[in-house]
Image (cartoon, rainbow, N blue to C red):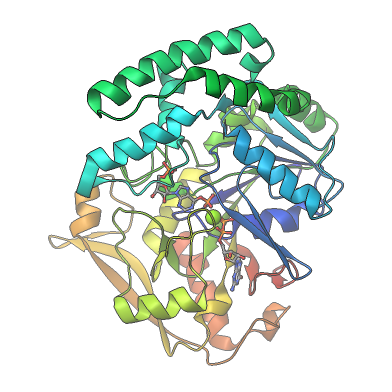
Length: 425
Ligand code: GDP
Ligand code: IMO
Ligand code: MG
């Protein structure tokens, strides 16, 4: 399909990085449509692990162009570090990575305010990644954000930083009574980054629309996951952007009719990092077992991810919100050796059964998950490359997930490496 959106179907970390890297082998452009360095996308290729935060997960494929759209928030220091890391790993990034004029910049005060805000919230803290994401999107919607385009003219940039720092310092001092920041040092750091960023600034909407007109293959890469979307997620325990597939259209400057396919990525169980409700979360012992088996530690913050059974209510919701055409199911190998598996098929609250994800978070929080129990498979599957090679109970598990979510599964990932993948006709 010429234009495919890859979207997370749960709370992020579904394995989008691995799937995008696979699709990138047959693609021309990989374009990230939202989020910032809060994302951590892991690609394992030829035994080497790459963790990408801002650079799209197609960068390992030398033929692809990678772009960061208007919906992204860019931390220049993090981006340049990432680029340097790729260069020292022998990956040529030159002329292959572009950033939209309209993408917003993360500035040091965004990170400071992110941390202060969490401290202020105390027990109600969101559990953010500390990358300044919320404050940067807040500035964007308050119409005082600083964008890539502002770097084009030095004076405009310096003036905007000064105005913003003055206002942020009032918040830092008067509300939090913390040490203020100095705009001169920000300006000098950012003018340094500017030299390296200027050649990357490009009209990403023109790039994509002309590529679409030429019939090129484009992957729109989502970060985070459906349940972290600012409108559709488990608010307020969400990120501050549109991680759902609709975000691709806004974040990249292409129209909705140009999207040919939506591929959702789901893990064979559920994880979440940070706070917020999680109906199918495991008890302590299973929590440790699956966390260890799946190496469930955050790619950005190193935090232990919370783990639980597969929740078909949230993935059914993700199928609906994103118009998922098909799924890539990841980490099936992690469930090997469990005697039985549970799948949450609905929630029950005050005698009522909810198959559709309730918009009222109190119902989700207080409701009880209703589980289907399936037989496990007591065999490793990481070397299986064809569907027919999977044990019968694994087949049944896959079939049941497709049935419950209403979308077929077209890829099954059974290991971290690019090649550890089963493609289903
Ligand atoms: P993303 O944010 O959606 O790109 O996912 P992350 O990279 O944050 O987390 C997914 C983790 O699972 C990474 O460490 C991947 O290397 C790993 N992974 C991806 N697919 C599989 C799989 O099928 N099996 C196993 N065991 N690990 C996988
Ligand atoms: P990828 O792209 C998992 C979570 C944080 C926190 C909430 C808000 O790797 O799937 P933020 O820093 O965005 O304001 O934090 O969102 N979060 C993620 N969880 N994967 C991610 O990205 C995430 N990005 C943000 O843990 O709960
Ligand atoms: Mg991740």
